[in-house]
Image 1 (cartoon, rainbow, N blue to C red):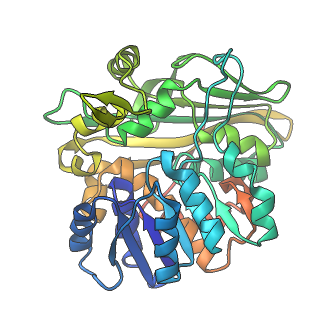
Image 2: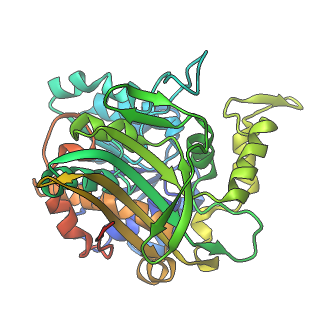
Length: 400
């Protein structure tokens, strides 16, 4: 498989590191706006032939298409902030190659009632073009990291093997990670974090469809394996938009353990307008406030040695089996120290990356096939779950 990797930040680096020992990966182009960053990763990988470096401007579709044609790639892997998703998605369609991302095209809140009604939903842009991809017999695999991605595979597995009827699919994410030397340092892209945490969270109910609520709503304490109890709150996330398309459930939610301090910082950024992704004029220079915030914070890709602890991602499913009530949590716990030793990447980005590489593996070997715009739930789940331990990220299951 020849892959055009758009974006070589923390997750992009982890994808490349996990792809390096896989013989079925013939080529992975490290395409970055910041060429020095891509060269840094290439040097770590130590294989210039398998991992060539290229400049790309992800805001320009023609820039992406030119690289895809130059290397005759089989797959375009989108590993940049989702503000560029439309251009990358359309580039893959135009050149006729497979596409994969880890976060779908962005939402836009309802103009009049944002905390009750959906506006443009996550992934709407992509799903509206599904028929075009089918006609061209092309596959766009959307939402395939860990959450969304692995968590959605778990939902499909639960529906196929663990439940007769599902009441709720609830993605639950928590961690006990600390970062030495920083008062505030997100362990994932702050751009993406602001987007998903300050937008109105989406909830799905069978009798109501998709609707929204206020950010950080419906707090609950969830007991995470190897971590313990963590308060989690509603956050906008792709799983809620993906799961009900393929899995029959009465309700779907996503809740994330952010912590009071993190929530307070996000609320302050919003009050000051620093979450704005639209450019404003500052002394004659056009700049997006959110980009300034990101530039002021440490790069999550370089925080690994200062991080301690574990992160847990998983899918909490309730319903009935053989006439009896059942509740199961399918999960994966990533330990930062182990991820640094194995991949040279911190736990949060490593946990996000491994699912994408397994998906590439399954596509390359014909175990997953399809055409159109498909989420992780559209595929047979056990072949993915069987590979997780081989990639260093075994899953667990807890009866709740």
